Length: 184
Image 1: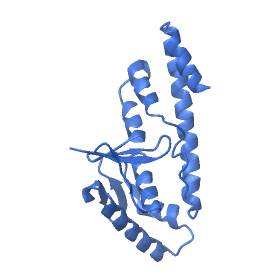
Image 2: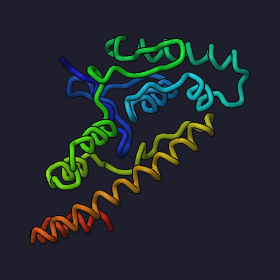
Image 3: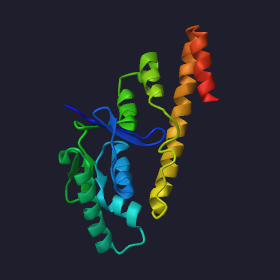
Image 4: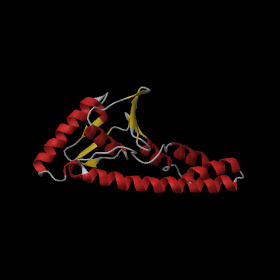
């Protein structure tokens, strides 16, 4: 089964079947990115706040419904986007995201004791979280991105620090130096 791949660690991008994939509307892409971060159901109320904080509630909910329609139409498979009366979420069987893959790696028991798991996680980082993506007319969304960027930066530095310590202890100095340079 082919999955839609969403990359958020670095400049955000989407690929489908090995090729770049474009979601036409910027706000629809922003919604997709928000849902892809942890691949968990997100409350409609949270999304309304992120995208329409200054809009009347009834209008904001209507606008969210329209945005969901645009996003669903823009996806290669409408089943990728799921919704209930209270929550919106992506189908993890049809969508992969680097941030979710990172979380899954650390669900491995004793992940920090396995250098290969740590290196796989480090390989997912292509830069700052959602680097270069801006949604000027949504200040709450921009604030959310800023906070997430800070969280992912701390995760990345902590991960690199751990890898440097482990590779140094294992006397793999070239690898330790490589990861230390990434840290710096």
